[in-house]
Length: 75
Image (cartoon, rainbow, N blue to C red; front, side, top):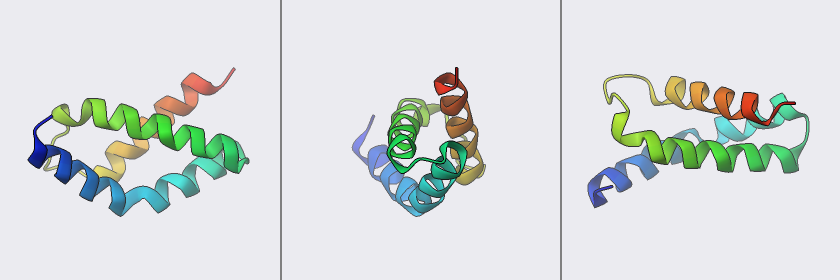
């Protein structure tokens, strides 16, 4: 990823981190597992950022990713 894209990703992600943590803890009812889910979500988002449509909502995009990561964690 280019440096400018990395910086943009970090800026946009930072804006939504509180939302991600709140969502993860709500989904898992466990702060430790929620932290793991957020880490997985951040990695998936970073890997997929080149495909992110910058005209769309970052929050909605991250929400889709966290739900995918959650479904992969669920038995």
